[in-house]
Amino acid sequence: MSFRILTFNIQNGQPWNDENPDLDVVDINAVARFLLEQDADIICLQEVERGYDGGMQIEPPPNYERLRHHLKDYDSVFSYPAKNETEIPFGLGLAIFSRAKLRDFEKLDLPAAPIQFEFAGKMRRASKRLLIGATVDLGGKAVRVMNAHLQAFFMIGASSDQYPEQRNIVEGLLLKQTGPAILAGDMNSAPDEGLVEQFKRAGFSPGQCCQATWRRQPFVVDHIFHNGGLKQTACKVVETIVSDHHALTGVFEF
Image (tube, one colour):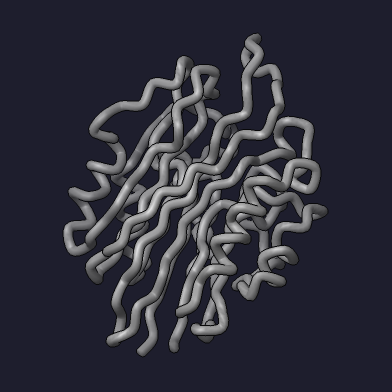
């Protein structure tokens, strides 16, 4: 049996505009149409919702609820990260959608680095980040699916090599996996950082490390890692304008 997984940072539904990349427009319906076109069995999404000054988090999460409406044939889970009163107005929140039933949901808060930086005239603290996981039964076998969104240290004048705690915690979780497992998500790793090699040493191979997945800089920040319980038979970057990221898909078999 083979199955198809997609990971995609949807930038809280904000489409890409070459002339005005930060145009404040949301089109979550376009995101939903794009996802349905990909025909994936499992979908991992990052930056599902928008962050707000003061750390406000809207309940129920509106973009997630809209996606659930469109993706009627999928089971799903969602979580916000821990609140940050000095949050910047970028995307946050993770979701997993699966055609097969999800079970054994897990939420793992990843600690914020002790960094302060200025944004929009205010001093900010780095936010906690998040990993969520769930198990899906495919062809009589259990597959653990983990979805992560790590700190983009290169955007605040630092590096995950200097502050490796988030990725070390993720590595510890990878080392605990005893069956087929996938880690997908936006790892926010700059080309000179050691995250990919670290996860490879933990037994998880990346789908691809050559084609950029982010429009704002030519970085491969989005990944699908898999362990030895799975064999990758295809991997593709799917270019799109419904976000400032491209989607990444992988096909796997046992």
